[in-house]
Amino acid sequence: LWNGATALLLTTTGRKSGEMRTTPLIYAADGDDYIVIASKGGAPTHPAWYLNVSKTPDVEIQVRDKLMKATASTVEGEERERLWSVATQIWPNFDQYAERTRRLIPVVK
Image 1 (spheres, rainbow, N blue to C red):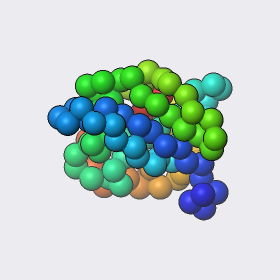
Image 2 (image 1 turned 45 degrees about the vertical axis):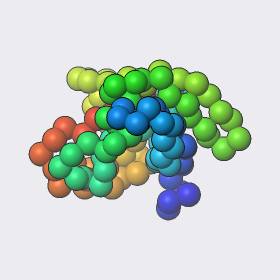
Image 3 (image 1 turned 90 degrees about the vertical axis):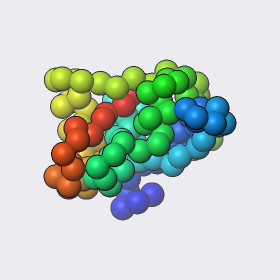
Image 4 (image 1 turned 180 degrees about the vertical axis):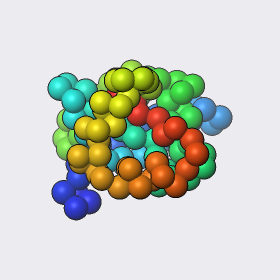
C-alpha cells in the first residue's frame, strides 16, 4: 500500500471515551502474529492507539476482508529486537523514526 508495505485496521477502545477507535497501521507478519510499531513517526510521545491498547488490550484487527479479535501485547528484550527487524524489512523508515525520538518505540503483537 505504501511503497509495497502491508496495512491493517486496528480497532481499540478509547482509554478516556470508551468509544471504539480505528487506526490504519503498517504491519509485518510473524507466523500467525501481526506486528505493529507504535512509532508515531518518531514523535516524543506514544500514539493514542498504543495508549488505548495499554489500558485495554482486547482489540479487533482487519486485514483485507478478514476481521479478527485479538489481545495485543507489547514485546520486550530479544523478542522486541527480533520483531523490530521483521518490521523494518516491511517499512525501513521505522529505523529513521527511532533516531528522531528518545523513547523506546513499542513493538506490539
